[in-house]
Length: 305
Length: 332
Image (tube, rainbow over all chains, first blue to last red; front, side):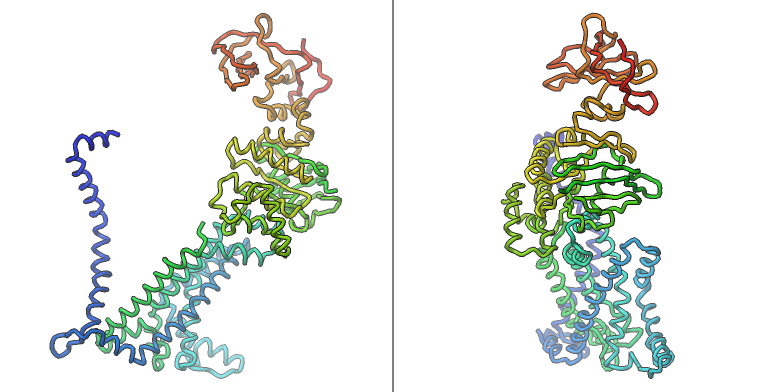
């Protein structure tokens, strides 16, 4: 009231006050803005810019239009890593979500040793990917690796798990599911605990069995969580490649290489930076499509409390 | 018929709370109210009847069938929860027919029943809404609809009106009672609100600390309270209870009169004007006496008054344990 009276009485002061408020807000935003602009927005724009130019190893870089993109479409390795990445995503995302849900439902119940189980399921999450990759590298090592030792114990012969193009992808998928599921379980567990217990009681009075209740009530109520997790898992499947550096270097014969690892190779092993920029723009476009699908399409179709 | 018999039922959680050897009977087609302060065991009793908790000892019979070891679904009951327990992702229609779907009732029958019930609880125009788009009273109706659509002979209600405002509560009270009588359901209704209990019940069971304090018709609880606890719990304002000789003397506020002369000397402390009547709070030798006066009362705080009452209106209770005395000497 007092402020309003002052403003109507003295418009100049009001203007100055508003300006001060605006400046204050911008100052508060500034640190984040600077960091985002310097390390995210500018690099994206610079990458996009470079993807339209020639490499310029001998002489200045020249504008080549979409020539780099045409080269990309003709690059067999690009198609292979993209295919690898799709297989990797389609296998890891549903598997890790299903496993996470299973574990969450299990440890949500009143069982003895519940805290211990929760901790055990969560442990792979706190390990760095590099460490996980080294552990699993030992599992998969031919002859004296854990897997081969167990196989040999039962009388089977050993196998070069990571050296065979037919098995290497499966090996990596199993490892990543193991690593990711515990993290997603935490989200499911939190969501399960927000479902009021009376719903279960009301359903049991109506004669709904455990499975019916899970299918018709629990699952739909967990949908927002499932969506959040699947988007995260999908993005992770495109941006998490640490394991390749340790375990396979993308081999054998690019059988385990993923898009991001291929970008790394092109940029820092082959030093073809403009082609790397072209691939990066493609990766960003894929991730953007995923994010937009979530925010524009899926969010509207899901029940939020 | 589907009367409910609870016989010597006990339930504790490691010796804490619960109920201790309670027994009562709810006649078929009647509305039985379990009344009491929070923590008295009334909700536990209801959940034991529903089968949501297992009894430690005793038996529960519904319609002549021993249901003690049966699951909630096998007991053929319906239930309304305090929080309504509506499924937030399902619309009104799906919430109401949830149980029919579980039991695989055919589409035609389902639709017919839904139309009838929606009409009965006044939700026909809201069937496509989600619970979050409804007011408290409408949610209550959905819960009610879900409970009556199965036509279970027994309906259990756990403080169904406690989340509603006063006006709506009054409205729903009449409505629930009307439904119960029209459909001939046996209803067990838990509440801590004695007004709800008195206005709706055929029979009231007042509970305290896990046992039954009194079991009777509303007028019996009011006119012949079995203990000073009942006397203090039933009635607004509650019965005045003062020590007298070696016992407790109780008299209802409407039976106390302000006298010009004579009477016990007292002093007006405050007057609460309620419209139809006023409650005059008086100070009688350190005890508070509430006096109901018709209409508006203009007495000022500090005024000296005399209090009197008819002997036929007094209730006597033992000093230890508070049990009602039927033979006690009456003061003159």
